[in-house]
Length: 357
Image 1 (cartoon, rainbow, N blue to C red):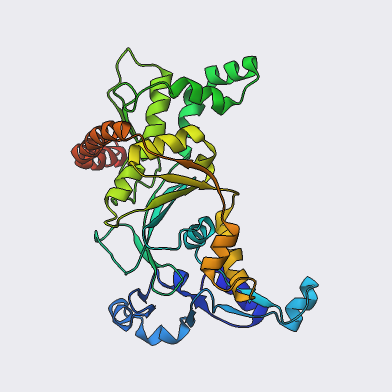
Image 2 (image 1 turned 180 degrees about the vertical axis):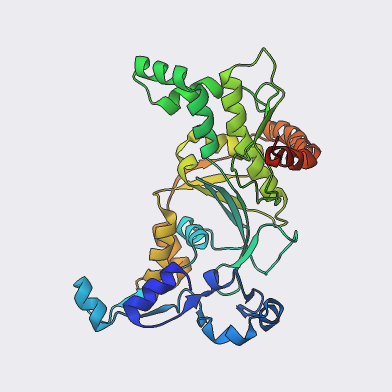
């Protein structure tokens, strides 16, 4: 069981999970049920009875028990809705509920997902294919390990001058940073940054535990503005890389997460990917998506389409400058070739670090 399934059990006495969570470890995602074949492969068929029944998110609810109601000071019998898996809830919360709708969460991770009308799994052995939670829909996702922490890291190293300028001009720190870097062309003056900053390596659009972040192309003519701009772009290249590996035609991309607060970054991501980007009003879209599911369950909305139509509003929209997109694609080719060239060198670095001299 997952944490939210346990909470629902304690509140209702009912043990269940839903398709969006259940689809990860033991599932036949096409049939949207547990896979007997997988259980046999795992050698866990005899424990099949321990797996909770799977429901759709719109079915995964039960009444609050008298005991739980008395402890919480709530009326007994009110519905307790389990809610979907976090990234599925976020897609719902931003309104990505039709095939071709994409959602990118530019936050602690750089998570990119596209809604599909079939359980497509290409390319194999990387990314996720999950049940969306609504009939006939699936999601193909690629989650880069780190998104905005790359920017936090570089600004912690070279951001003191920006801080002093912001204080002197009585401006926002990030407004000053972006004022400095937005005048540079895509390519950051010839610097490429790979945003593989996690000590655990990378998982999308490739799996490589030894992958590491790196700058390429630095000369004495570059300064902190070039480095910071390269980091902004590095997250953009990683986003391009993920969508390159999702063979689904994308209509639009809804952006959420901390990175969505930056108009500069959103426009840059639109220019780099060549895709229209939309930023919905609000925040905490995972919680919102769960609330919309609950709203359908209790009859506040007829269906999830009505829920999204009534509650999701766009705050900002961005259209790509295709000339900049051409330039970004040229640098993306270099971005990808560079990490392919150092693929084995990452392993060598790890081997050296593990040696005792």
